[in-house]
Length: 105
Image 1: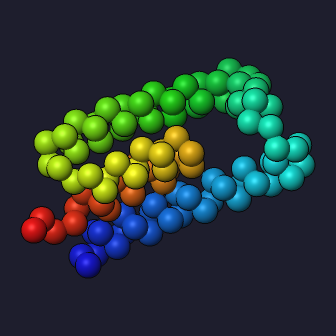
Image 2 (image 1 turned 45 degrees about the horizontal axis):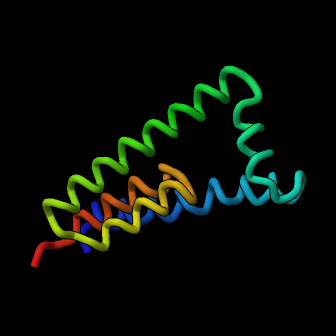
Image 3 (image 1 turned 90 degrees about the vertical axis):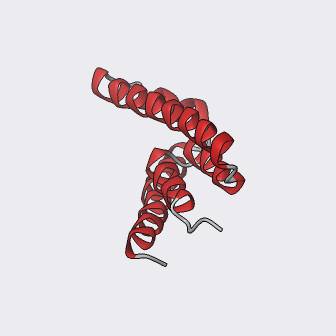
């Protein structure tokens, strides 16, 4: 595996673990409520701006993944879409780059 692919994989793992640590801590303190978490993301203008920044980035990444997969037929790369929306762009983007950069047969 090339150093670049290893870096993408490491970033995907970090992008999954680091945010999840904070989400789990928040759930432990506030109960498991996704609607309450989304409300917390919109508590002020700064967090609302960050929320929308990530939502727009996730949508753009999804459109890009679908467009690329339809051309390249790299179907496994579609797993980056649920990773993006269930974990975050910090996991989905490097995961997609890792999957996309594999050697072509």
